[in-house]
Image (cartoon, rainbow, N blue to C red; front, side, top):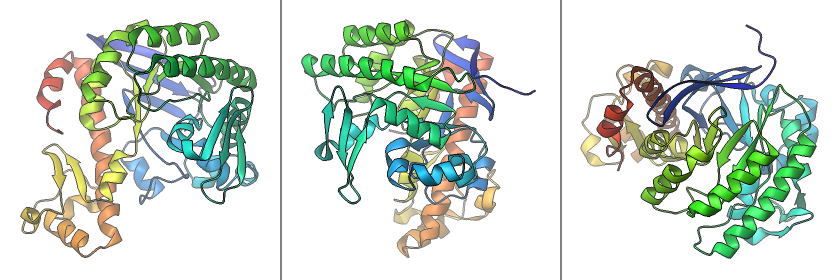
Amino acid sequence: MSIKEFSFELITQDDKARLGKIYTPRGVIDTPAFMPVGTQGTIKGIFTDDILKTNTQIILGNTYHLLLRPGVEILNKFKGLHNFMNWKKPILTDSGGYQIMSLSKLNKIDLEIGAIFNSHIDGKKIILSPEKSIQVQKSIDSDIVMVLDECPKLTSDKKILSKAIDVSTNWAKRSKIEFGNDKSKALFGIVQGGLYKDLRIESIEKLIEIDFSGYAMGGLAVGEKQHDMFKILNETTNYLPKEKPRYLMGVGTPSDILGAVKEGIDMFDCVMPTRSGRTGLAFSWEGKLNLKNSKYQNDKMPLDENCEIRELNKYSKSYLNHLIKSNEMMASMLISLHNIYFYQQFMREIQKNIKNGTFQSFYKKYINLFD
């Protein structure tokens, strides 16, 4: 079947947990979906072919970082990031809004212009307006494009959060105008409002009025307690359009994902699998395993007997423990690959349990396993 336009199908629900499919010209994405993060056009330490073998259907790239390196000129020469990094499936790109927060010491916000950065690489002045963000994402040839937003740091100050909604709404309107009417791709709006139900609803209503292909929950996973994140999702996801995908940005651990799926979220991204892999932390059906721990020194069992990618099921925890202690780069490569594989298996089990109407039991069994 040749797909020419972006669309979303909600197949079934188990209470608020949703099973669906996102259709794009570059492939179908089963939801709930996890997107490995390829900030610089690579999933750190993992070959592209191996990412495919984990059943990953979509990855994430970052507008700000790809604007700096390799830059728009090279991306245009390759006709987008897909060709540049040899990835043929869909790509979602963050707009650079998160970097406005995370690199706040290097930028200032001008409502009319956008974010004015001093590059963290060489100090060069970079202007990232809503229009520029969309233009860069078009050079990347993203399948799912995000509007530029202002993502405040964790705060209880309603004035700061209200101002961020005003700025983000203004930028969302400008982003949509710049995006145009390309139905083969999607443009997602980003909800702000911190941990306040009334502000979140205000932001949602303003974005729905503009009308987007999907809606993301921004301004979460910025240091708040997990309970508070789940609470605000519980209070607000029902205000989002039922017929469009919902994306929780920058989340997270398996328990974060599980709790958010319970509240009706469809899409996730996080650096957690590879960042943890580089520190010797593995995620498995046993829970979190710190493979630096001496108790694994004599453990002959693999992390997953069923994972045949790069013959991971032939490497013992003892061997991985040895690689870590020997400071061998292969340790982070193998553990990162395992973690991406596990995350995708975890998502498949979530999908299966929603389909079978057993998600609530699955949730209760695993929600505390990764604490």
